[in-house]
Image (cartoon, rainbow, N blue to C red):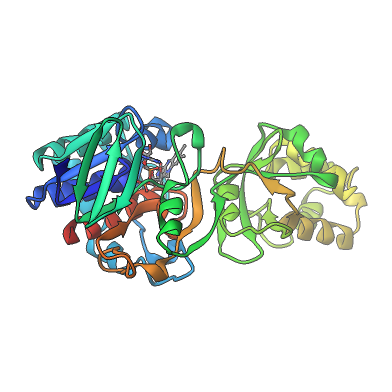
Length: 389
Ligand SMILES: Cc1cc2nc3c(=O)[nH]c(=O)nc-3n(C[C@H](O)[C@H](O)[C@H](O)COP(=O)(O)OP(=O)(O)OC[C@H]3O[C@@H](n4cnc5c(N)ncnc54)[C@H](O)[C@@H]3O)c2cc1C
């Protein structure tokens, strides 16, 4: 049985980062993944270009039962720190929008960079076999025909979102078996599905529009919404999905850029214009038509009373959908919930009740907004842990 200072389960974003930091501090580190290569989710992230961080990273862009938990790790390893690493490897990058940083080239460059840094720290990598773990004077691991042990074990196996990419609930199973609490995991950053009266909107599949979307609780997100054959998607919807609970509605402002009393004013300026043409100026034509059908407004704008126009405008600003569900873990970019932060030190991510056990990345009940925030949590929690191993 090979002896290490630390064994890290999961060679994803968080596990690779913890391995780099501990390895480069001179620790003997074994990194294990059941996939056939490290960083598979990184490779498909950001449409293959990896949205590797966000310049606006701040604790209020994360969801957790304890909104303070992530503060320490995020303050100690910032978006700028990760950018320094990226630039140190001469990887070209750009800001796409809203502080979101992407590779100009490919996400493969990020995985290659992380692996190069691991190699510089002398990290061993075992791939292709699931591991079984036992607590025995530290932690003993069996992985295929090989065995290893260490006084420290890191759970970095992520959450159950996108199982076809190798995601599992492994971290939860281990944590539960050792008595750690789990905050109920739910799919997040996920498309929402529509039924009932809203089925009509499915015929708009493929139509996108800039909106401001809001869940019943949580902030407003001004980004694009996309109609799909099952319901609603696009960045604005993915963002609100993290705050949405079954049975609740979401609100959409379809005309966020229109000034107040837009329709009444338009009537005064051009009463002979069909109201639908007017709405089409603010929205894609098919969407404008569907919304006007639902609002039962038609004909020349001059023939419609100011009261009806004001009511229609209000509705366009506060359209309510009540999704009947989401597309689930199969399509969720991340998992909300996970191993309770109450079980972990916010400084080192070590389990309070199981000394030597650490949990990092998405397995922890910390979930970021869309836009590079989840990787920044993976890097930051990986660094905090790597420094403590
Ligand atoms: C399609 C998609 C696109 C995304 N794009 C972005 C983006 O652009 N920016 C962003 O910030 N976030 C993005 N995310 C979210 C981001 O990928 C995750 O938040 C992040 O990867 C979490 O890092 P992690 O290391 O905790 O888990 P992961 O990266 O999921 O790594 C976990 C690792 O553990 C391994 N594993 C699982 N179970 C076992 C087991 N039993 N034994 C051994 N190994 C195991 C897995 O194979 C995997 O390699 C995206 C997610 C998806 C699904």
